[in-house]
Length: 221
Image 1: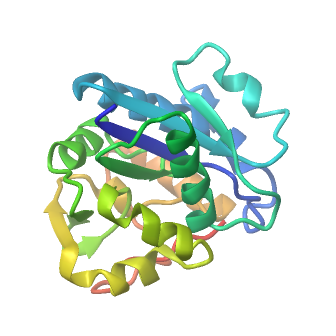
Image 2: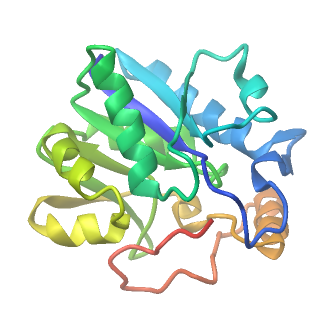
């Protein structure tokens, strides 16, 4: 296995008020659409595997992927942050004898990011780089973390992604993409309705939590 795409979906949607992973987008749950975009990107990059990180016990979501070529990983018991979920995914790979050159870290609540964007990030991946997509001067998600930093992640399992980028800022490379959806994560019901409406008309995505010039907007659950 050369690369891995890890979709993080172990959060509890506190600000959304219900399980946002099940929010309907184009007739299917938001998380399923996110994973399908990951699978589409993986098909274009040889030896790329897709993993989905769920909650420790997730009986409603797990069956959604019964017929998709993805591997499910259950994160440690709640509370669990992004770094801990990612560490759970990397450790699962290593237990299986796999050591991907880089991992593309996708957020489960970003269903509008295009497969072509994911593909471009993977095509620029390397084991000694951390890649961050940039659109209209603002950094977003998903990001690519090279193999060299996997051990550091294990030591920083309670750290935010932004802290990891600060620690290894010399190795961070911006990748320009023409995909405003890298700055559209769904935190609240109004975010979801606004994003869905903009998707219909092809407008630019925007998220209230995005601050121009920030190192990286911090995702919320």
